[in-house]
Length: 248
Ligand code: NAP
Image (cartoon, rainbow, N blue to C red):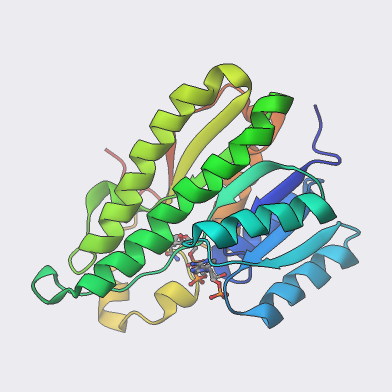
């Protein structure tokens, strides 16, 4: 089964890694639903870039930490593009603080946006995938979910949670032609990491054997591969894209 006519939904695709994934999947031949939460202008720019490349695409607003908005988003995409056969759970936020100072809201906000969202979208997406017996789900975790980080207990918990969720759902869905994998990016240059102080960035760089920060395309290339038929026997895996940072 080729990618022609298949629909890919990428959450948080208005900027950063999600945008690069949307563009790469568009190049691969998928129709693209570009989800965003608040930044309509950026999401429309991604759609425009895709359309210029003759890729059918729409922008779809939804806060993926809200189950009702997720349901509405799927209905919109199904009406305009068709059923979602590729789901990339990329949307995520950080609200860093040392554990001693972390507010309950900082914990809740990150767990909801980064982990609940994956449950809501995946549960909704697999209904039609089970019928067509084909599906690709890629969950964007993080190296922080593997090794932890000071000031990121909320984020690390959410990203480690994604890994357990990925493996469990992969086991449930493997016999139905649906693969579920997680990717664990290292330090990738986006708005999320641009706000970090130089001192922290330099400390991170020292831990990366490749000697450079990652680009959004480094991550998008892996997602693109995982969504094709070349990756049909790969499921339940966590693949780091981190310049060797977490190799054991
Ligand atoms: P980013 O530049 O901050 O972009 C985040 C994207 O997620 C935006 O499109 C944003 O939409 C969207 N978003 C946030 N909360 C959302 C919600 N509740 N509902 C819908 N969309 C939402 O982030 P990024 O660096 O590209 O990161 C993308 C993913 O990779 C995240 O899951 C992040 O944890 C993960 N990651 C990043 C790095 C890194 O070094 N950058 C490393 C490891 C993992 P709006 O524009 O509308 O706000």
